[in-house]
Image 1 (tube, helix red, strand yellow):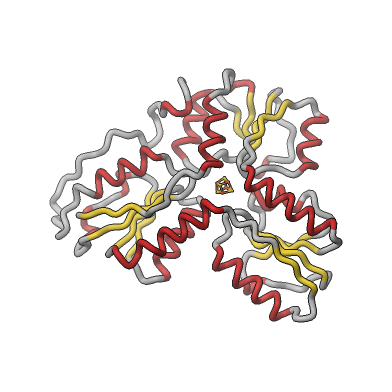
Image 2 (image 1 turned 180 degrees about the horizontal axis):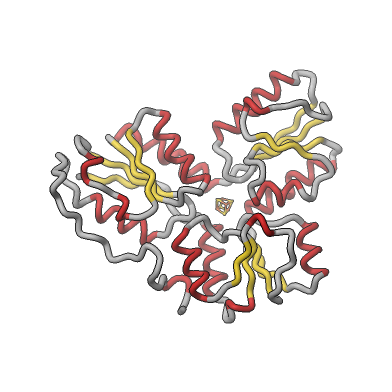
Length: 306
Ligand code: SF4
């Protein structure tokens, strides 16, 4: 079967930089990582194997016992930063600069006296970090969930990984519902997210099916799958090459391949290797050669020695 990769796929620079910092931590047992560094079970397992302490995202209000605390690419509020510093914690900050840009945009709108609207997922760690520093904010996940707003002087930003289509829908619905509002919007969707979504849209006319690789809990990965599904393209969202079954590809001559921003290059390569073994006319009796890559338990060199 012919396989075509999306022009942009997989790790973004924010995740790569965070993992580079992780790889250089000399004593992982002295470091607590707040929340999920990336939504990738293989990477998270490797962090455990190396001895990092990890706090679930839901526990972020406690003060970790270790001296050092790692902030993930999703960022935290300035308020939380000060709280940890006051508790004597040394911060290892891997906040993505594009997330910092979202914080700054929200604070600018708040300084103008606007009620800030964040288009994004309520409860998401990035969104929580943004709104904690604001005097007033409303999080809106989609155009059908615009409730009553306390002000008509509004500022709108987006969670960095918001699909551009969704942001446009919410903005349009806001203007329709509050035509009298003074509304200023700052575009805070990150470029790697845009690139990956546009690359999928560009790829779809050339393929019979699409395989999307990434964590099932990864927002941006799910969005890539959704883009293809809503355009009527047969789509398979997997986390690992062993999730592929030849019979699923019956009748597929050309398959597209993409991956979310927290998917390892090695996982994408291994999926491509398996896909290329599947004949165009599916023979369900075919035995796929398993790629040499771990699902969870083996060492992943980029994270450093175990
Ligand atoms: S998805 Fe965008 S905002 Fe998030 S870490 Fe990657 S580059 Fe940064």
